Image (tube, rainbow, N blue to C red; front, side):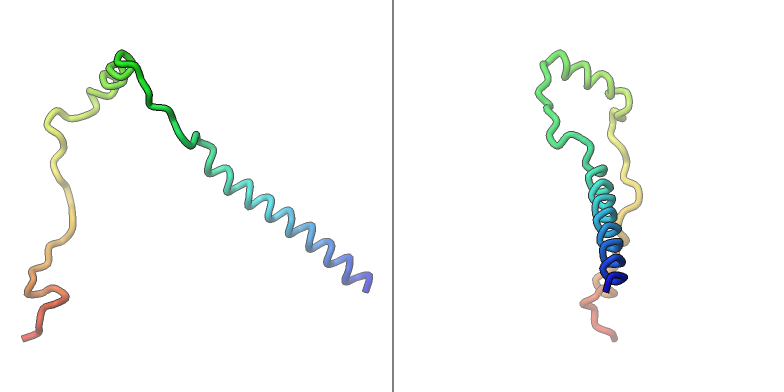
Length: 81
């Protein structure tokens, strides 16, 4: 019985350590601030817009890719004929 008790205690210590490591990994994913304040003064907002303004195209971006269009006659509700 001593051997089983010792094995159980070793297993329990290992399990506790594994749970702690899993919690640390999970908590590491949430290191950012939950709510960031976006209350900027008009001057700060203008500076932020100027900072990224050159990265945004003036005319927007054209669509690329997208979903494949299947004609209704070949879609899921089509009858075979």
